[in-house]
Length: 252
Image 1 (tube, rainbow, N blue to C red):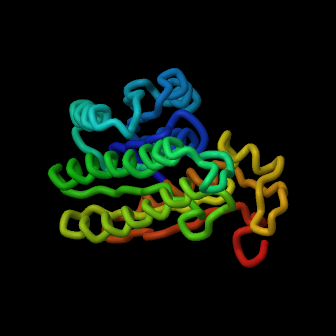
Image 2 (image 1 turned 90 degrees about the horizontal axis):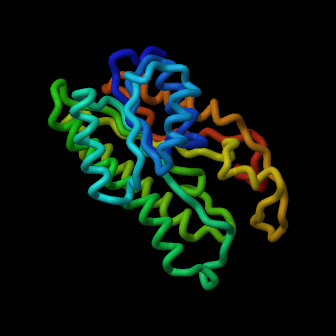
Image 3 (image 1 turned 30 degrees about the vertical axis):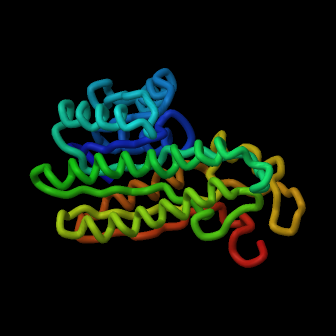
């Protein structure tokens, strides 16, 4: 897949899925805007890609802050002139916690990043894609298998990912007149810092604690690039990519 001449924004590009996907886009020739909270980690993502510095724009900040996202799209426009693809990936989770043990501020923090942050990025991207010439682009939201089936004690994360599905469907509908395609990738157990605990043991629906298989994060990156490589007349609306033997389908 060749993305030469295309401009891609990846949020949460400092680690895990975001880092792997940003590196894959850079290696495929894209101009990539990398954003996340840690500037040093974003610089490391660029270094690992082997791409020239002029192929990337590093902007560290909090995607759930309107002033940051407004500035991000202004800087992106100044540097590259247009936006072709967004991987709306930034997100956080909490340890397994029953709802009555959860602090309200922790619930709000998850929704601020996972939902409000995703909204702000989608809002800025949609506006830019709608007004640029030629018009259009693609927004790929990082959902989760939790957007379909929750894990025990995951009320905040699961609620946030159900909201992402609503965001995806609405953007798909509203984007039609402007050649803006929107799809969602639902990921299960990609090996990253967030999923390291899964290999040691996580709560199961039957009340036990059990380790779960994981897959290489590169498979997620390749899947995102496939979604992004399609012409705007075609769209992967929903894709699930998961470790084959994880307990998700049926009884596990």
